[in-house]
Image 1 (cartoon, rainbow, N blue to C red):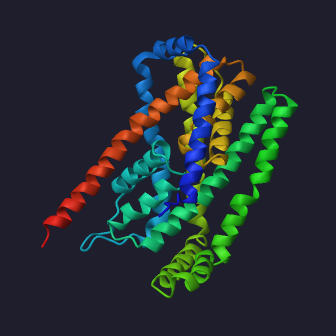
Image 2: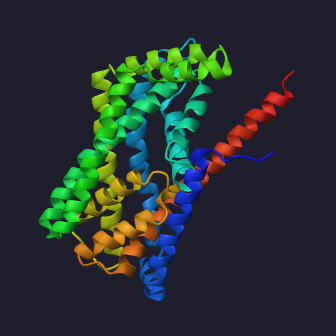
Image 3: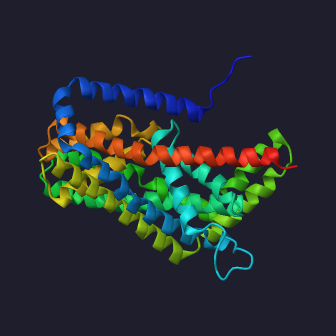
Length: 341
């Protein structure tokens, strides 16, 4: 029997292949020895990127906790303490980021794992999935604001009209995506309609109850305006905080830049990585964006690639421990389940 590869996996494989090809071309056309010397010049100071990234996780975890509050049960006998405490949600946030950045999955893989992990603490699957879906919409909205700021900065930095036009066209063409997605999730009973479409093929099952519950929780989650604004603002601040990584790294490389330049580079990078979400870890996409927009502000290809490699190093330093701890936790639960009578 012929084995069919799921469409999502096929897209990830093809995206990864294209991204890897772009990365190889960029490295071959650059002076690799010069790029290595630039990285080596920073020394161990690059390791400070890992603890600084905790600020990013902190902002996301606080916003996610506010969305999860109605679904997060209190610990029996406690005075206001919830089963999924902030420390646990902070760890899950790191695991989600590690999955999205380091594993060959699309950018929703971390969210799926997050739903499973918070389920360990008594949060319903429908409630957790609703908050993750709301987070995705908020991330897209925050990213558009961040990208618009980057475009204004790019214009002030004297970018060519062609470059600005191409970025603006991509931004405008993709703008309906978060708007339509948010409206469909809020008013469209998306999962109920999917279940109704699949019912003739799979028959009646608990799938219908799960779809109805998820639609109900999504409508409830997306109607909590104050919590949505709070989480969205924190996500926007997280994007801006990531700009300081570029500012810090270029200072270590002996090429200091203004903070506005760092914001522009980070915003363009994040925008293109999200547009190319099927490319695992934005492989090749991030490097190409750094090279392209780095030339606008006078960065050589070697320097731009060195900055990208420094950010990749930070992803590994933060992501690998999170993924290892996740697998250890999964193994511990499996071992406990096997030993229990």
